[in-house]
Image (cartoon, rainbow, N blue to C red; front, side):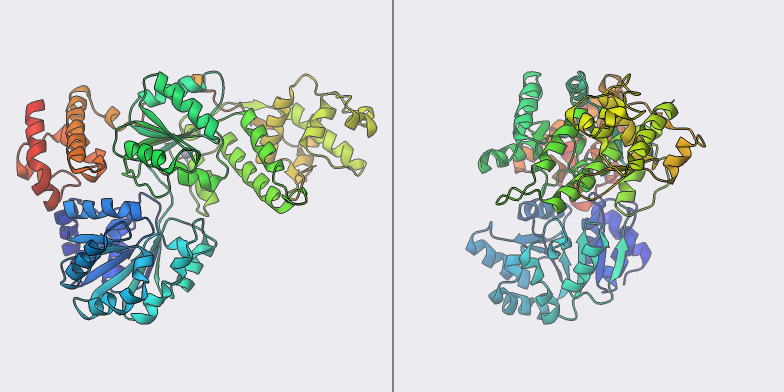
Length: 615
Ligand SMILES: [Zn+2]
């Protein structure tokens, strides 16, 4: 195994980095020691380097199994740009090309070979090329990317992944390195069992994405204008909407405001979808407006912002979707807009979950969906650190403040709502005395003095609390109930139709042993600030920024010449450092982060020339 100093040297020589990112070095060491590994790393955590660097430092070939065929070509191109011999074999290639690549692989022409699982598991591949490869030049490791596909508990189960245990049976001495961005322990143990891993080294990276800024705003008349300001601040971005109709509307509105935007949803032809996705990846358009159907299997590392224009369905979904921002490690922004209408829509959709034959409600599904909606609302309405909430949900402790979310940066003002809380809790208590339990809607009707049939028929108009809260709107009461639930001052049943219940803390409020402080409604968009706080170029001063733009244009030109996405050539961070340092010699150029020998040979001259002309 190479000494540490050699690792650091190789890291710099090949990839142009002076230090490992958190968690990488430990995985690299275990891989070099020939151990089985299971590594849970968030997207954007620098996973690829964990198996690429060991692959280059060992004698044989490393085989990488990935279900994301569309990404293979870009990954191989990135490796080639770094001067690394790599190739991919999948169904997108004609037969002769596959034969040629297999022959070259057996000659030892590649260090890394990416394979689709279907190809690897074909019986004539297993008994032919794979056996020959094992004999000479040898197999260093099987890398299983997106390893959660092996688990039915994961979000992306692929039956063919189940058969990967064949690899262990046929090649018991070759290490298996499994990577996934899915955090749950159930999926983790499934991966270990299904792939027959042997006492694997388990690496759990933090799922914290420190470069992402999180903020949440209540929807109002200024929401679209806030979106437009954010878009105009620059950088590639994704706008997520719940429905196709909304996708089309927002996309049209942005286009008419002069923004290069394209829609993406399941109602479009597959060809149109692909063309729109490519236009986004290749920086031909700035914005993609999409339903959640968009994003799986794309890897655009320089997405600078992700906006949810509607409530996400689950908090995990929100983490994954917003996590498509800033995979290159540069600052990026994740903004969520939500409004009372969204909550009603979500509630309505949940009530539509019925058995198609009998028309009976699917109670279990509705229960889970309600619980997920509550978690999303808790996130949206929280006054505590957004990052801490997300990480707690993923099973990770985090001690705020994070310094990069709206609640940490601008804590919301608290208001005393003890009186209203007592009115509401007494209403629940009065009903409980009569052995009655109701959900929020009915309790609010009573407080507001409704004379609806539901209220009258149960004699609830005779309760002393009937009408004591008519000076507040239904929405204000709803907000208060959610705040009380959120603070644990009131409980709600989790099964079937949720009803409100008092708990020990509720009684402390009723006995005037404690007060109730509630944050003001979430920030309205009209007061939203920091639109440009996270745009990559915004951290540059004017002179550097104009050089950055020149370099960015050159990158786009080179990318188009080679039919590549721009990020394959250089990440934004590398361009930004070039714009600041302005290297004019090869030696200076090689000192920029992210430039190894391969990129130096391929691109240094063009960029140095551009820097000379721009300064
Ligand atoms: Zn925070």
